[in-house]
Length: 327
Length: 257
Image (cartoon, rainbow over all chains, first blue to last red; front, side, top):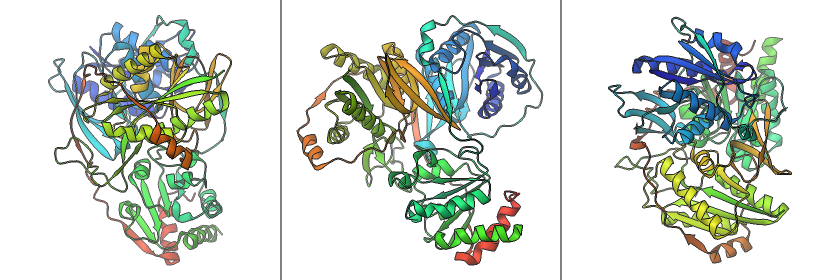
């Protein structure tokens, strides 16, 4: 009688999202009245067992296999599916990151069971094996869907940033069980073979400050003043989809449903109207400052703070004021 | 080596600043909205067309949806795809298991009638229902490798080199052919149809494949909008007069340190 939580790591470094996984899984296990088991996969995973224990895991399964040298969606999915069967898991969960949803989709395909991605709330009902009621996101979070999940083993992800990671009141027993899944060696076909690091330091997804520009910036060159402010704040520059489509910035700078979802301390959105495609990528920001000539813009009405006016005048003035105060 | 590539796309509404739900709470109110191809999949079509332009071959686009989804197939024709299959639904949204089973059947039928696909492309996830799984399920059913979130595809010796963006760079995957990949927006900037493309799209032959499959275990109850956060916007002022207040806030938030 277990809930199995899949934790993600990159060569021995626990993913920040896995702290969310442990937080949501503790609550889900309590609701189900079951133990929480965590599973870690791969060569460097065992060292993370302590963090899973601190997060409330009664048992920490560590999968080791020659195919599991690095992340591979098929190998991870096959290993988790096998473990779910052998421990008699009633449910399998993860956080809905790229990897989390991909692995659970692989698990579901292999077990021939449904998988509900990006839940915000789950009601496990009578815990008698019957259907669950849950709420999940559609349109990247612009819309919610109330849904039912009817399956002998429930496979669900929580949306990334849908809950805030919190430490456990007390650690779990943290019993480590190493296992070797019966993986077909051919699954190495989707294991990462190489990595290329493009940027050192802060990135859009992790930056404490994001200074973003939309159509209102007007040109590729117009972003120079945003680059300058971002540099002054130790942040990075983002943009809207309109900007990417115009070729003013590369797609990796795009904030939104089909770009990067950000969660900075403050998001400074300049010249961005705030279509839902953009908003869902920005809405996890702690604070939002909108700078826009249009006081009726969607971004302005959803922001915590707004300055009404021309970004081309305001943004350099902010940079100048910061420099003045710093002397 | 000429490539035979299939791309699965979905017709979705194109919302602006707000998204509304129909009175029966079962779908997006599209009365005043246009429709488009789900953005990741539009990029998947472009990626397929570029690969066949470089290496030769043909692109088959499949969609499962209402009859109106023919519009998205003709759009794909206008930007260079060659063959088109519509798997008609009654207009209701199919759950991910049912959708994947029908697409698997359609791909299998298409390969039996023609030649096998070297590559099947999906979008990373659909813009609307966002299930994050149909491509994975189809790949598993076909026994083919699948990696999602792909922002770069090159032809390699025995298959494809695929790149997936991670926080500070990208991961590289070497997948053997035949393969399935889920594409993300940003892999390319999709072209606009040319006049010649538009004319060709009118003449494109759209095959209809009547395929049904059993419903899966995920059931939709209703759609609704999230509660609006009772946010009141504090207007700090007009133009540069507000700059002092802006920097005060940056100081308070501790981001100036």
